Image 1 (cartoon, protein in one colour):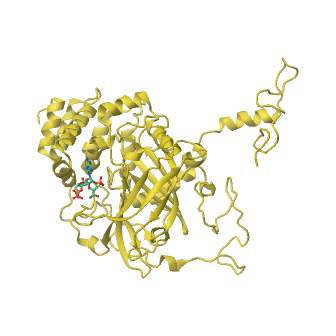
Image 2 (image 1 turned 180 degrees about the vertical axis):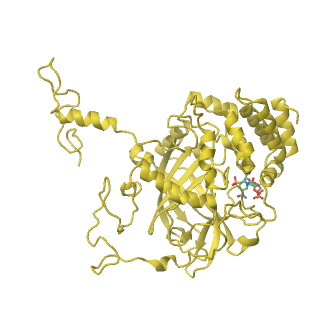
Length: 482
Ligand code: NDP
């Protein structure tokens, strides 16, 4: 029903949208004017804290369709052949604040929420298949080094290189960042990756490890450093605008959904630790299998309600899919829901964008902004006919773990090191042109005035470990002895 007049938030017809109540036309205002008070008080509360990471973003709704039968690998409802599942996809940069520029050099968040028949399934990925670190105890330090100094609140490239060079496991991800993939042309022109290794199990309880790859059907395209820099000034919202405009005119972007599947027992002796987030599984070992496609076809109608308050969490897992011993994933399983409870409130899952499309029946109750109508009984178990759990749906989820309680790095598999896969990228994947732009991007970044001479030497050493030719190129650009 269309409303014939404007109202306050309680539905009362507004007496005026522009005149407050006063004692005579020139007199003081009245505290009893609750229309004015509500307007001012609500305005003061318009923001929730911005995300500490991935603050600047945009997103849209769409649908995934599965075209292949992968029921032998997973019983998950959303991955059954022919299934169409509604979804939300949010893109973002990582380090910049809410008003920062979309084309900055940074990884991009690629966070998916699937509204499945068994509740929401979130894949909170990036536009790179790997990450800077492999232990969550380093995460806040890493992010601090990418954001602002304590004293002058400036970003500081010296601090960034300090962290990266002291944490050589970052080399693979920093390599990606310093190619032109660090500045994608638009969100539509980049791939997404689930990055972590996840568990899939089928109806018989057989288990597999899986990695997700979402390949852009628009073609992967990037900006060179000059174009990206120019766009920062010309249109800081360029990527948000591009997505909005293309969906608005009916040009719906899509991604092909691929997976790599590893038989459960392969993980023990695979040449790389398959749970190490700084590594990929080479395609030659575990080929990508196409299983479907998703398309974005609907813009949000209210950005704040549907994108800013969207809460993605890798802990949103559904029957047929589980976590893995990836330590970064284990950390995120806790930290994502924790940040939503703080940022939005304990009932963030009751907001329409986060609410599953299936009926819920949990025994959690009350708290600020409750509007679920959970009725009696309010406890489990009960003899009052309350809903009961579905343990049988999770029967394949468990696997054997044992060991001493330690604080230790991962045990190395035979080809594990910090630089090998970055070297392969440099040697076997990048073209000559891409190598040249990677060197230029590194040199540009490490030439910032705050980067000290000592740090420049460490930067050269870091890249020499990836490949001597790369080290020579960076040394030359920085004017440092290789
Ligand atoms: P392949 O030759 O089979 O695959 C290389 C992959 O690199 C491509 O399929 C493409 O993946 C990706 N790629 C292409 N151009 C670039 C670029 N300019 N910057 C970054 N990535 C690019 O090799 P392997 O699977 O044996 O992997 C070799 C190296 O490729 C790895 O060490 C890793 O650095 C990189 N890589 C590997 C991926 C994997 O999951 N195996 C994924 C991405 C990169 P895509 O289509 O996903 O873009």
